[in-house]
Image (cartoon, rainbow, N blue to C red; front, side, top):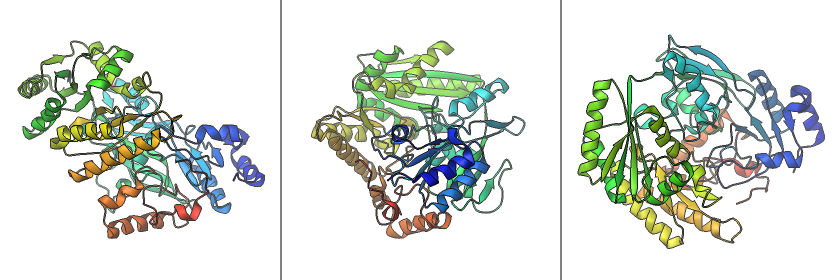
Amino acid sequence: MAVDRATVTAIEAELGKRAVLSEPHDLKLYEYDGGVDKSIPDIVVFPQSTEEVVKLVKLAQEHNLAIVGRGAGTGLSGGAIARAGGMIVSFARMNRILEIDIENERMVVQPGVVNLDMTLAAQSAGYFYAPDPSSQRACTIGGNVAENAGGPHTVAYGVTTNHVVGLEAVLPNGAVIEVGGKEADLPGYDLVGLLTGSEGTMALVTKICVRLVRQPDAVKTMLAIYNSVDEAGNTVGELTSKGITPVALEMLDGPMLRMVEAATHAGYPLDAAAVLLIEVEGLTEAVEEQASEISAVCSACGAREVRVAKSPAERDLLWKGRKNAFGAIGRTSPTYYVQDGVVPRTQIARTLRAIEQIGQTYGIPISNVFHAGDGNMHPIMPFDPRKDGDLTRARLAGEEILEFCISVGGSITGEHGVGMEKMELMPRLFSEDTLELIRKFKSLFDPSCRLNPGKVLPTGKGCLEIRQSGNLVL
């Protein structure tokens, strides 16, 4: 049910007509994210300042509208979908870098700044922003904070929460809070850590202070090539057991690397069963030594060849293949379902065998490209939305894969978030008492259940029941 004209007029009076979308054909563009779920919002608004966000949340309170914050819409768990209708607050126009403080290794940005643009802005001074999701050319830092995004290089540097030091946010009653800051080790509760990864269910983040990292003296990128998926998976565990931590450790299996190579011509061998993309960095001497150690481990575990990128251009091409993997899938299947389970690194080979078996059970040719360094699996399941039951089979296969991840000591998400996709699996990870504590935190920040209802908490623990609009497409 669309918002009434009086509500639209009131919002337009505050932000201007060019900052408001309310026509059905416009709203259709905001009914989905990078996942497979859909739900149409009642209105989409584009604030340009914290003050305008405050006005919007007060209007939402007055007109009893649910509020969903949205970045670039690249998320994969339904986090930016208006599951209960209401207002989507798009931060696309809050896209300014407010401050670059190289002396203190800090940057302050608005939530709509594209991830990669943060590194580009700091690189002339010899710095970069470390968390680098595969969608970093499109995804925005506000969404990264909401989902606690990761990326290939976070095996050594950590995920978003390890690099966000301060936040400004608007609560659903219009109050503006500032938590953390440039200073290190501020006293009090770690509210920055609490809000990072809260998936937009507690506050709307309007300003972010991040830590910048100095560029390394030397970088070496390696490609280990295997005739066996098991051997590639076992290599990851063996590197861990020897205390070797590269800054990036990615794995692509045979079906995936062939799709990637056809699309990007990155130099991946078409006859391989799997490859590991490995990167080390630091002082030149240390990099040479670590690369030699890694090459020896790969060979001992069955790698038939270990290549080293001979130039920055060759290195960039190898990473182009990895970063464009999801796009490359479109050459064989325009629609696919991707999961996000985590397992201990010692369980990667076993998990890949389980994924293959699950794919055979459901008749789905599953391929894999994932962050092997931290055990963050991304099995990809193609489906045809025109065929009855195809998406359902993919969902069921995905759920079985996550159940297996839990069974070997893993988790249901490493970086995509719980969203609306995995909320019913939360009781498999957390006790009733813990879920109740999470619910109380949600209620403390959002007592009226206006912020992103129907996400994270399982049915009965969350607040979707209060605001279910009935337009959800499953």
